[in-house]
Image (cartoon, rainbow, N blue to C red):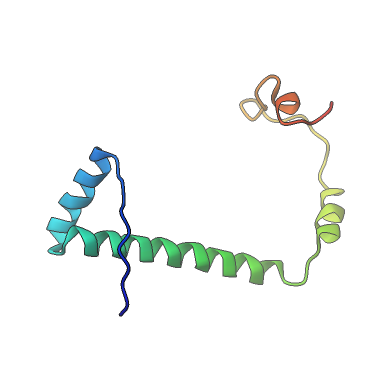
Length: 93
């Protein structure tokens, strides 16, 4: 296995928690962090592959067409966008 050195800056609280968990697992902090990064990569890549398969051959136009079936109801209480959100994001209304 080829390795590269990478200087990693972590907030003290995160480093302390990672060091504690590494000790509980009986591995070095470096091994624990490498494993955590590998797990995150696996999760993200698996999710991306799942979504690609789920979308199939769907196009943006297919998506927009399906949105035509969504009723134009106001948001439920608590689901409203913050005041001024549309303007802050560059949308006109």
